[in-house]
Image (cartoon, rainbow, N blue to C red; front, side, top):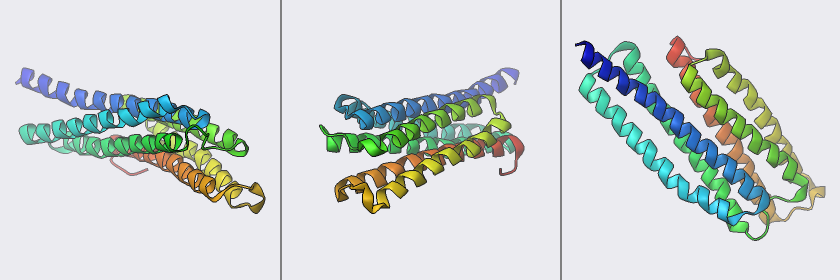
Length: 216
């Protein structure tokens, strides 16, 4: 019985590690996508676009593994909550990968030109840094189950919201001189970063719920 329980715990630990691995994958993607769109780097954009398939496959495999554990082990109480929560987190992380993919596709679409004009290069660079920071924090939250850090992710999301508002304000300012095509690109990019951060917050909230049994 002790051996069976040990193997079961190894499976649960493996799910947690896979969530961390998935977080690392989407972090790498958003960092590369940000560099690609800021510098019109087509090769880097193509790397992100190709990696999205691997992220999707990884997430699907993880969900299938979780379902298999639930079917075989019939967990209850905290174990069941952990597995169901893990599936929801994997969905958020997969969506973060999709958003990094969308950013890279904008870079590819406008190549060899840069999708971001000089006037907005700084705020978009900062958005990329915030996205990276939130991803790294999420990985640490999943690993440590640190509820204080989980709450901090939501607080740090305010920085992304502020940057998003700054970008939108510049776009709608008649004196900005942006073309309609560029304005659409920038609006989409801003939304992709803002949603990326929102999904990071969602993962952190789920960890908080997993540990405390209450919603942040």
